[in-house]
Image 1 (cartoon, rainbow, N blue to C red):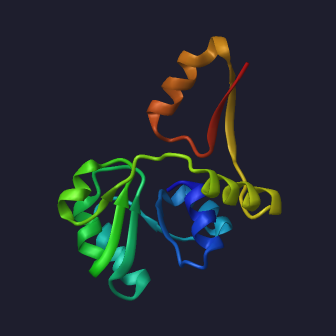
Image 2 (image 1 turned 90 degrees about the vertical axis):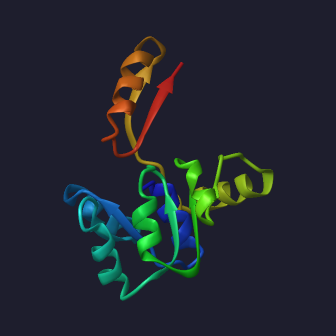
Length: 148
């Protein structure tokens, strides 16, 4: 789960349940999310911590449509930035595009300290292949930054 997403959702007053490995549960708590461990039985764990079906799901990793539909209330909303097939099941596939007013709101959150960015690692331009390999491994917490 992206830390930006948690921070932005919390800034609008949403209760956030985030999936992560046990090693990252404390980190999710620092962001204000309630952590659950991903993997087999995820639907049951989400339903238990939520006290029933949930109002909305945002997918940042893909291949979780079955879990999404299992925990979502009738009439609930769901979206994915990673799985276009959600549209076939009543969800929205979102291709991220910056809009001036939304970007300005994110800048306000950053200026106020409500939104922070964790940098996992920095790379020089000649280390771009290494940065891509690190990103592809999928276990990086924080952003990878390429410096000129």
